[in-house]
Image 1 (tube, rainbow, N blue to C red):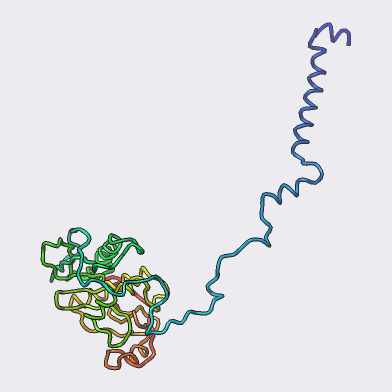
Image 2 (image 1 turned 135 degrees about the vertical axis):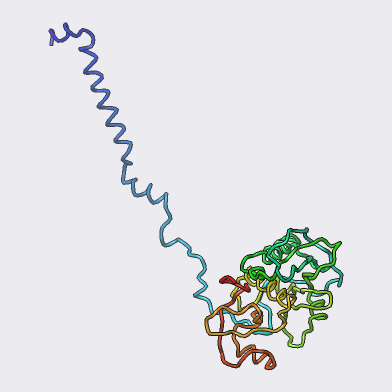
Length: 282
């Protein structure tokens, strides 16, 4: 030891001290990783929630299916009972969409004065829905015969696509079957979109309001293009034709009972809802 101290000088005394310090530090570090008194389980529990307190979201399968009579609107927001009967033009002109080998249909978009669109996105949201639907490749322009062009109000359009109050819709479309519908009013080329349906939708669409709005536009514009007749469901489980009265039902027999003079056979065939003229291409 004397020789070791003589050979290494002060380092001979420093090495044991450093060794002790190193051992103490390592012991302290590893001790800190192990909470005392079984705290490990407590710490783990504090960072998680016991399974018994987790809340699951609502499961629609647990609820009774909602039955909405054909004569009634689905539940939903309020709508305008009575408007002014005058209209404001909304939106801006856009380039033509579609080939238009037979005809380019020009259109403007109007909202009845007194109809407040704030609850469903404002005037611009209605405009965007109409423009997007008419320009969609699954829409009427899939047929090269047709094209659409949104024009300014200074020009005389082929179609006036109008969002209308309940009373105005009843006045011009009629209400003989006492069900809320929309219509094409040929005098002035008015595609009348019933605001109550725009807000509430229709039971056959099972809550898919976006698809229903696309259907509503395409169906009524279809009348404006010259497709005056309605179409029946062709086979159970098939997509419904766009000119079927999908607002009321997807079942031929139900539509037959509403109006036996319509095109629907009493064969109980039920289609799936479909918002597009050409969902699988032209």
